[in-house]
Length: 469
Length: 112
Image 1 (cartoon, each protein chain N blue to C red):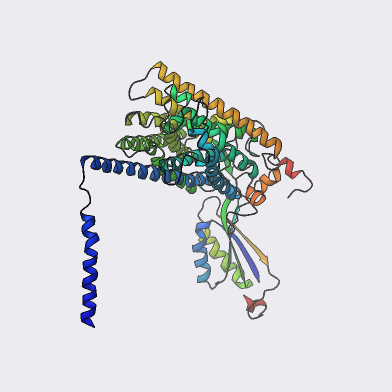
Image 2: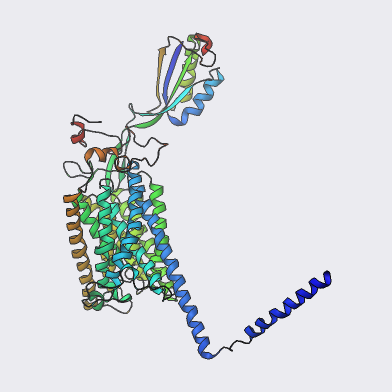
């Protein structure tokens, strides 16, 4: 028996030698095939870096969600999370169906693309680069969409927000995007044709989001109790500042995908972009802290957090074409600007619970201008002029389309919840849920407006109504 | 029987509890409350807007004791809860009509 088994094993081994020998006798490498193989390594590295960066930018959605939840009241936390979840989910679908084609499709006009809808550029078995590129671009579109949810927090009807989110991902963001970035794929835009510099999207992503947010905050109106009759701002403190801080750290981390990832290539260039990104954030945080310290006699947490984000937004356009020293200056100025902008918008009674308009709109514009001023190859009136054209075009496009959109939504489904729903909290009225079921989150003795403090001055419409709670 | 209700500064709770247990009072009810008397609140600032926090966190301790124990308990609380600063709190004394121990059904002095 044993002899039989040994014979079978030997025979099997011999039989396997034949294909082995044949395989080893494949063609010897040539210079051409080596060159191809080396190019393939670079291509594969490009894919890896672009998709890792896309994952980092995706994680910024968690950052935005935590910042917004932390800066608003506990009774609205579920609503904040739902809006953020849907910004990304609906954004993914609408950008796949419509947005990507408008932004990067072939174009004859230079104003919007007309191909590539539903990812039609991809055929199974074909070049998958369009998939990697789409993945990277969709997380950028979702970033623009979620900027608006912060400015419109605590009083927006959920269905109204969903409608806005779809239109932004499908139309508003990609059309402007095509003007500045269409040439990165199949398209081409009139703005990039002028030489507009916006490497990772201070304007394309952040200003577009910021100015649509401005339109939304204006159409909505301020939260009940935010401004006194003489126009002074009342504090409505966020319910969880450590959560907001966690959000900022997550955004900072994600920005290491946002900026260096925009090379969409694995190259040594990403090192300078990493450094510029980090330095600007740090400078922004420090200068915002100092500015708040001078203005309010104490270093203020929410302003300092906004300052880090302001630096990050501002550096997003110039990050590939400036020196680290310039990053310090750009980030520092953004840190000062954001504090002044927050105070300004309160003075003109535009209620922005998280400072989204100041961080993304204002500092996005500053960063785009700075890209022209601090351009590593030298600046000129023409370069700065083109930057200004882009900044202006973004404002006109985003604010106008945003304003019209929100007015339309208001006229159809209504954009704002009722005062009673706003007092109760959107978690209950829009979602039938509580974010913190184990905790007493509404306190009659809390200093927070609308979490207690039901003074007649603040809630006259509710307290004088017969069915008042 | 007397109920002794005292409002104290939160960080004094441990000392008051230990002091009461040393004289034989081993049961109490504690709640976290807010209030103010002569100690006003303070003002805070958030994103450039100032606001006042009127109510100061305090702790309320409630004990029910025999009439004879009441003055000893009050002495202990006065000694342990005092800091000398505004906001030390108050003690209120009330008569209790009756008391019951739920587990056994005992009534009156046996219940406390």
